[in-house]
Amino acid sequence: AQSVTQLGSHVSVSEGALVLLRCNYSSSVPPYLFWYVQYPNQGLQLLLKYTTGATLVKGINGFEAEFKKSETSFHLTKPSAHMSDAAEYFCAVSDTGTGGFKTIFGAGTRLFVKA
Amino acid sequence: NAGVTQTPKFRVLKTGQSMTLLCAQDMNHEYMYWYRQDPGMGLRLIHYSVGEGTTAKGEVPDGYNVSRLKKQNFLLGLESAAPSQTSVYFCASSYSKSGTWGQPQHFGDGTRLSIL
Picture 1: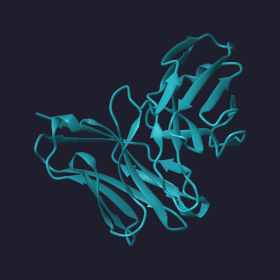
Picture 2 (picture 1 turned 45 degrees about the vertical axis):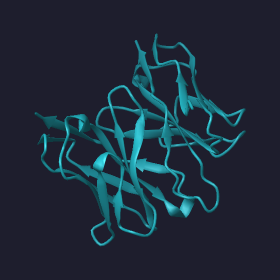
Picture 3 (picture 1 turned 180 degrees about the horizontal axis):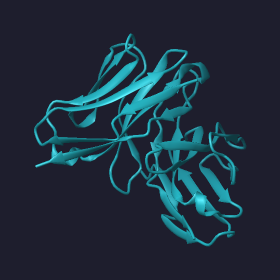
Picture 4 (picture 1 turned 60 degrees about the vertical axis):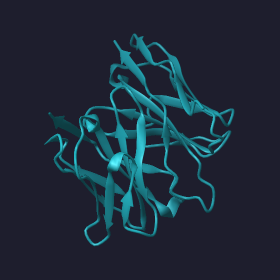
């Protein structure tokens, strides 16, 4: 069975500092991995995804994530935080064994950006 | 390009009342989903559909029913609302055909439902 663990329900950084949001997953088959962002009173929007190929994935708004199979991790990073990055971030995993259409979401990490 | 549209956006119900949440997508997606979002619990799948006329149970289906009579619409029903169903409900859709696996889900903006 798949599962997703996001380490830290809240993360606070200063504007301009590195953003690191941690995600570990478990899956019995090769996974598809996603990061979504949710702004207040909105639905989730896709930031980036990993399916196959290059393990370093670049997404929108300067975010990137690296798939590390040996560590079963898919951490999200951004070199320099901006105030507009304040939001909730969800890591998610889909099971390739079922066609990848069912997705398990982590509990979310709320990112605060201090001026 | 509307994407995924949910109606209503807000609703307050009394315990025991019934209601239907409507989700409509204009992307010709095969798969549609209903989630509930509660603080600290992420998104939990209630029901989903892999195509017109089909539905299946997700992680937390009790107390909910769904229908997908048309490909573009996915309805979520609460027959007898309970306070435990107070939540934010999200509909999502995705396009997944053989050879296009791992497609992301597209979300609506949610329905905020309070049961008194």
